[in-house]
Every structure is written in structure tokens, then in C-alpha cells.
Length: 143
Ligand code: RB5
Image (cartoon, rainbow, N blue to C red; front, side):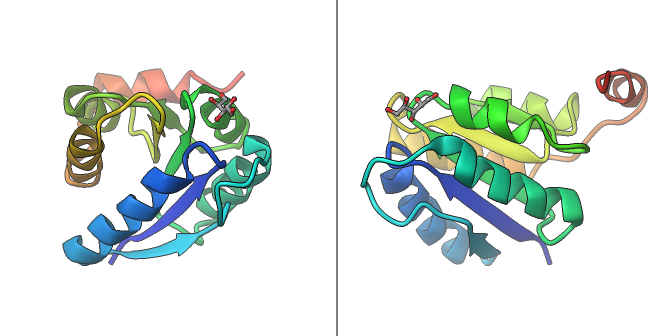
């Protein structure tokens, strides 16, 4: 059973709360690394908490949300073995898994329809990595 880690800043908080409902409906367990309200906060704090949990294996995969997705994506991608992928349509979420073996789905809370975000979550969690030539490429990412 996968445990999904969640994180957002204030701009991503409303969508994170919806994601929790969808994960429960889908039968996934989750751990929420904050934030816990729409009060202004700094996305690195929560992005790093989630990425540390993915890095350590406490969570198998993660979902991170800020306003644009960019700031929290930059934060999680500083962690070894973490591959955050900014996704705004399910086709990109599918490719992030198939080609990039992404382990954190990142979404732009202020720039994505809820129905599209739900499709991204379902697709990301339901798509396998293809391996092969893509493994060679992701192995070459760390510098
Ligand atoms: C917060 O206002 C906003 O800057 C943040 O959510 C995110 O979009 C940053 O990348």
C-alpha cells in the first residue's frame, strides 16, 4: 500500500484539502506535512518536510502544491532521489511517471481547475515508470 505525502503553502492549501478527500476515496493512506491553513507561509518549509519524507522512504510518493507550483517544485528537487514534476494536465502527469519516474506530483494551485487536478492525481498515481532508456537519463540527472 502506498503512503502519499502531501505538502503545500497557503496558496496550495485549498487544493491540498481536496486532494486528501480524493485520496481517501481512492483508498490511499496519506501523511500531511502542512501547511494547515490559508495563512501566509513560506513554501520551502513544507516542500522540504515532504521531500525529506520521500527521501527517507517514510512516504512512497508525494503531492506538493503552491500557487504556481514552481517554488515548491524547486524546493523538493534539492533532495537526493526526489524527482518533483510540475504538472498541469494529465498527459504531463502520465509522462512524468512513464519517462521521468517522478516521485512527487507538483501542481499549480492557483492555475489549475479542480477537475484537472483530480485527473492529474489519478493519472500520476496509476502510471508506471517505463524504465529502459529513461532509466539512463534519470541516472544522469544528479550533478
Ligand atoms: C505565494 O504567494 C506564491 O508566491 C507561491 O505560492 C508560489 O507560487 C511560488 O512559487
